[in-house]
Structures are given as C-alpha cells and as structure tokens.
Length: 217
Image 1 (cartoon, rainbow, N blue to C red):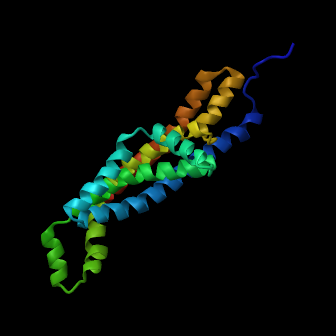
Image 2: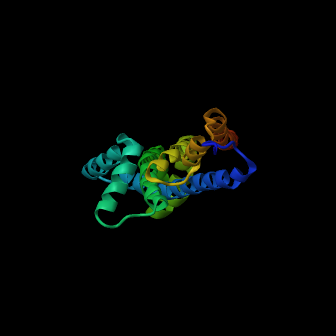
Image 3: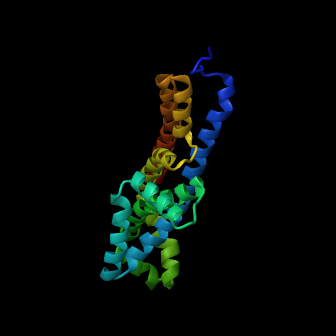
C-alpha cells in the first residue's frame, strides 16, 4: 500500500526556492511601481486644489480600506469574467502595486508638505524655477523626512505579498501550503516560512535605522 504522505527531502529545495524567488520578485515589482506612482500621486495631492484632493483622496481611501485579499479576488474574477484572464503574476502585481501606491501617496504627500513655505520662497527668490525648487529643495528635504514611513510600507508589502496566493500565484506561502498537504508537517514548514520573512524584514529594518542615523548627522 502506497503512503499518502511523503516527508520533506532535498528534492523539494528547487520547489521551495521557486516560491522564495517569486515572493521576492513580485514584492520588488510592487514596491518599485507603487513608489513611482505614489510619488506622482503624492505630488499631485500636495499641489492640487481641495476638490481634486477630495476626488483623488476618495479613490486612495478605497484602496487602503478594502482588504487586499478582497481586491485581489474581485479584480482577478472581474477580468476573467470580461474574457481577459490575466496571469496570476500580472494580476497580483497590478493590485499589489496599486495598494502600495495608495499608502506611498500619503507618505510622499506628507513629505512634500513638510518643506516650509519660507524655504520654497527663498529658493524662488534665488532665481530657481518652480521645477528646480521641486527637484533641488522639496524632493531631497521632503524625502529624507519620510524615509522611515516609506520603509515601513515596503516591509508591509513584502509580507502582504503572501495574499497573492489566493489567485494562484506560486509564491512562498502557496508553495508551503502544497508541501504541507503532501508531507503533513505544518509546524516545520511554517516555521521555515516565518524565518524567511524575518530574514528579509529584519536586515531591512536595521538598514533603515542605519540610514536614519546617517541622515541625522
């Protein structure tokens, strides 16, 4: 009689590594795209009228308020029902990037607004154009102020990437679920998954503290 379950073996290393690399890949894509979009959104919100802020802020509030897992399922289901099914990586990257943008937008808006108006006027009085003031004054000073918040959002995105497994993306958590089903060793596998996220998040946190200290000098 064949055993229904088989223990973990070295042959599973490639399968686990695929999940690890997929997790890192989609996290990096979401953080990069979300940061660029968030920077643009944050600048628009910092410079726009109240009516534009209300409209744009309402859209961002929806993205921040609706749980990420629901956004992933609804988007993947809707696109499939429209006859344009997307690869799980593409669908997951789109939603995770928009979700990241919603938080990054607020981070960068606060950064742009943190530069005192007197400093902006001083830059203009020295002959700088509007865009030179943005490039050489508001971005460098404002972004230094929001780096800790940016890093916090980035770390959260790395952990939230596990939710993309609900639409079939083979990231680390989905890989772990399949191994658990086959081996019936949930404790060992989940501890390994937790250690992986710790090994990524903790060094990034230490690096963030190091950068903050250098900025204060």
